[in-house]
Image (cartoon, rainbow, N blue to C red; front, top):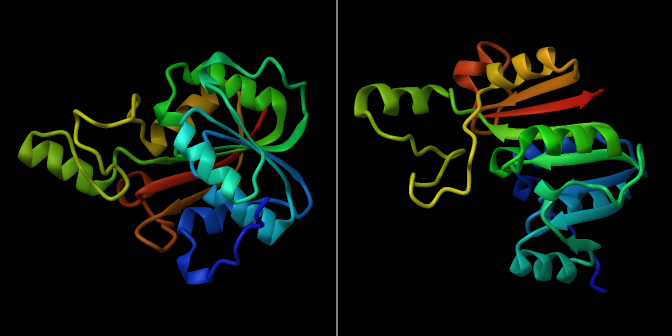
Amino acid sequence: MKQPVNMRYDAIRPDHRIISSLITAGSSVLDLGCGSGELLALLVQEKQVRAQGIEIDEQAIYACVARGLSVFHGDIDTGLADYADGSFDYVLLNQSLQQVKKIETVLNDALRVGKKVIIGFPNFAYVTARFQIFFRGRTPVTPSLPYEWYDTPNLHFLSISDFTQYCRKHRIVIEQSIFLGTEEEIRVLPNLLARTGIFLVAK
């Protein structure tokens, strides 16, 4: 298998850099909806993790294999029954939570299988999205929500406040949260000013 190619720091996506910083070197990682494997390849290279992915798109799986990654073809909406409790140090749901049909099922399984779960999603309450809804009366298209309403893979449009409230209601512990604008971290009014929310959570 091919080995992951060294990546320039400035070519790494900001959310991938943040997620990498949250993960302990040498740990085990399961990436749910891993796409073409950019994040997993980074973690293998930078943190020497024991990586595994699950992805439904066959073309994306081929890209993962080309990167030397172990990825299974599967639909995370059907659950993770084949994985034992606490079998991974981290489970990742980066830019995939909003695309699953059964959020509660997927989250509960992720929290069961992973000792910690890292979740990243686009903030639907970002100021530009609000502006487009209020003034244009149209479904917003932003850098973090780049799809038109008719071809979007997103099934759920949640905000940072929605997710934090969900965690409180379901007794999910938010151990750390980071909010991103274009490149920079947002520390004030994240539900308004952040494009992306990244959460490290545990049961």
